[in-house]
Image (cartoon, rainbow, N blue to C red; front, side, top):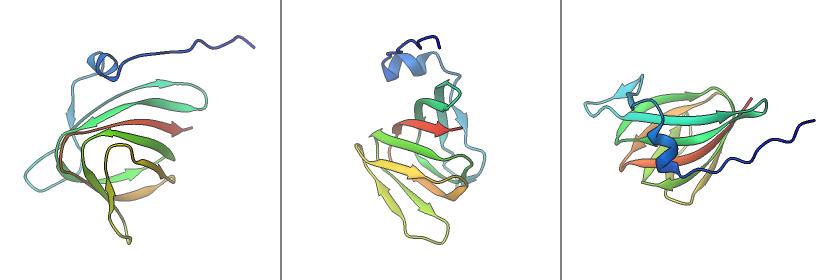
Length: 116
């Protein structure tokens, strides 16, 4: 089996090469968050950086996701459950098909891994 190459990047440089931020698909209210992400894919999943501007929206996480928040303050309120306050340094695991509402209070940045 060929050895895979280690990839190192700064989050700023990595996102600089990403597509421009886009509005979220299911906003709540007048402030519409814009999100941007870029990932490296393997046969095991995708790892990358995600950034969101302030706002609220409905979200369904289709595949299981593990992430660590690097900056910002937000809340994720799972359907039929209590809100989860998120601050820099917090680590979250979302089971597949997690649904809820993101409330981004200040611009947030996270590193993530989405399982295949």
